[in-house]
Image (cartoon, rainbow over all chains, first blue to last red; front, side):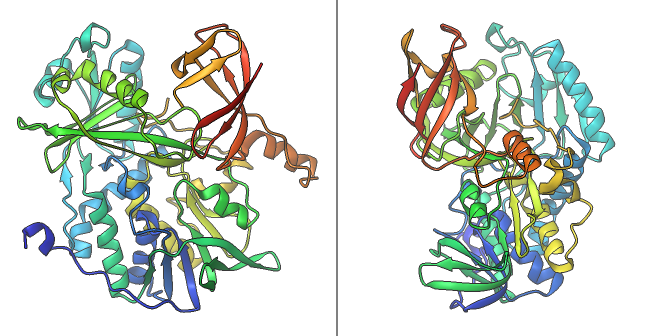
Length: 402
Length: 81
């Protein structure tokens, strides 16, 4: 046994019951963290998390594991900064090692326009509690090994913002930490239990349909990633969401070491080094919606071309493994959390390309909403009815969106 | 999806085109005019199956195409002029 496996807490598996106070559909990070905080903070343990495959098999296990808070609107910066802080304390809270590493993210600017955006981002982020500072090309050279400051001639590095508290963590361990903490407190996690429909009674959602019959529920929370449109349709809820594939890949090991996370909005790519030493590269999601998890050669070629403009050493490396996830992306690029207008049916969705970093704060807030019946102030602006109130949260603060 | 067959320019790489959104009609069962407006502006059908959508040939003939595509596997079924 290694230090790695020794700290893996066991998940306790239970036989399913026919009825729960809370049924959470989707055993990814958000579903499991909501279950954990329901049990740990609010003493609500008659909870089931239903997962169609195995836990973290969807987007939780497919993202690029970046934790950061340097978003473009105050509501989002405060929310993600709280999540970043919860991540820092997650090992202490759950007792499971999640391989959390504070690395800092450097967001490169290649044009004067982008410099202006980064300066504005620094002011907004720092004002909302997420420490972000402008760096000169000389400072960036110190922080980013192997950087070509000329950007291959096309993408010169004029400067960039440095969000110093950005971090990475091992994604499946985050899901396991929450699943272990929740199941040890009596929450049921039922794997290989796809939800085929919702049980409705007089306009209210009162349970879910599974292959082995219905399960009654006081409240149903959809924490589904990607396929949320179909899930919400079972409740008669229509969502401003499109599902787009996002691809990523890892290279072979880079022995020299690469401490920071580097991102560029103009190149729409980001890169970091995994704890195994591989270079992990992601980029923007496909422009057309799709439920396909097939990585295309064209996407990989485009990602590899872009990122090697600023990090030419990547040209000598090989792509080891590729994968794709299907992201639920809302009309204003911000998540949707809370009530749906249908009694007994809540959603946490629209996690697009920013779901992993939000797992602790999203789960904590949804648990509080379920326990108290009121959305906490941190997530109140992210309610679904913001589209009706014309209070949209237009935020394209990720490298994958412009 | 990697290629798109433009009726004017022939088979061209997808990078030449810009996605213009699904072409959809507000479902008939939504009766209230305000609800219909809301649906029209904000909602996506987002089907895990066949969808009809608009694509613009930005770096080609600069005309709009109507495309029927299977979104579950990201494959074009038919390109209408």
